[in-house]
Length: 392
Image (cartoon, rainbow, N blue to C red; front, side, top):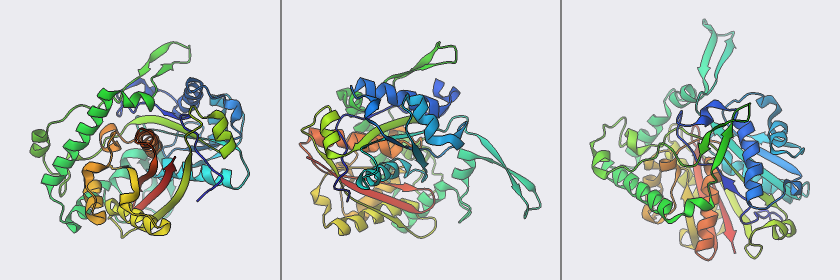
């Protein structure tokens, strides 16, 4: 897709994703934290920020001084470079990487930093003038009101999962078993130390420079038994509190560069990561969980590959039913995907979610000796996004 764009191995990292209101991340400017953390992560990977000439940031929830977007993030990173912000709900993380690839392919940049972040904790409340409404002034809680109401359909986000489950005759028994399996995958991966290659412990300092604590685990994630899942009350068809993700905070970053720059700064220059293809679809209103599967079908047709050609498959799955529908539409065993964990388990800070998914996918592909990597997910409303990369 972008033959000149490459992702240098090892020049990436993520914070852990503590759940909503469970860590000091709820108390800080998330952009400042993300910019400073990107600098720390690059330092840990022994990559100088001097290599970067552009920055693409991705976030979805308003933060202080968001008007200044990439210039603030770059200043907090310690490198004065231009850039811009991209936002597409939960597809933001993957979309930002794609846009970075386009920036390299155009010849405008040699090394682009992708920095994605969001904080659901203490999300702001906006006050909007509504001249056409009798109410005249409307206050909206950015996270909770948007998840609770889709202005195009009038339904909550959760209702899309129930509607899709009914369309595909998904049974609660399968959704519970799938969720239980996803938790087993995550904790097995954690015990093996794999997450240490992806997530970096980060210390938070207050304005006086005193420590507020460390972000060193996906707080809020605990083991859950299949019996507990089966006992949970259905909020909608097949959907319980245990078979959907949870709000969280965090950041994730990686670099996109030219091939020569990738060889120069990669921690393992013999590994080559390239872009293969990308697709997006929009399905019928209120059927968001089926959109990612449709995007994958479209993408595989575009690039003339099959599911059997994919070495690693990972997705953003806010509802377990997403994976059940994907399995049904693609005729693919859901036990073969998300081997190192997924957002269903470790949380949903929106902007950086698919960036962390992508980093985990690349690390898994390297362990397996390379191959095609398929990453996909959904976005608010009824949009699906998918992309394939190749690791050699």
